[in-house]
Image (cartoon, rainbow, N blue to C red; front, side, top):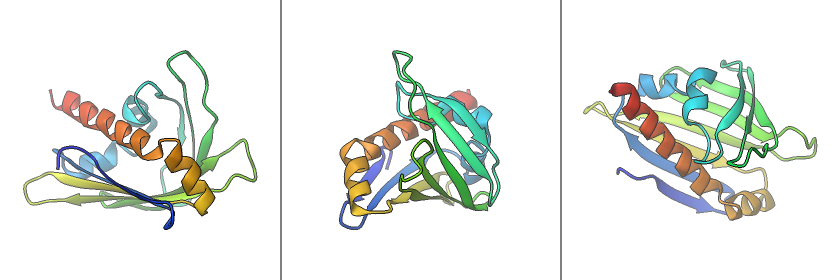
Length: 161
């Protein structure tokens, strides 16, 4: 599996993406843990992460925002880290911060290192409602996440050079 495997279900309110990276789980976990790393790869291509505030620990908060190719600012979003298990799992909730009525999604990232030193990264998102799933999936949530994973693969390859 070199490309990102994507499965979505509006009925089940889920989007799951899996990708194999030629990197150990500890490195993949590390590049999710600091703003310095996250700003280098997180977000769809053409919409980089330009605001990245993180208190990376269970119970800690984060706040992100992206900027588009023409300089347009995306709405801020964020949430709390619900579980941080080093090199294994990150669970967080996430929603738009400008809208207090906005529903949140829960994202679970797992890092499954294999014997050959590669790691399967699985991103499993559960949306709060069917309507939230319809909106996000319909607006390209899975493709945007896959684009971000493409950025991550390039970032890791550049770090190894």
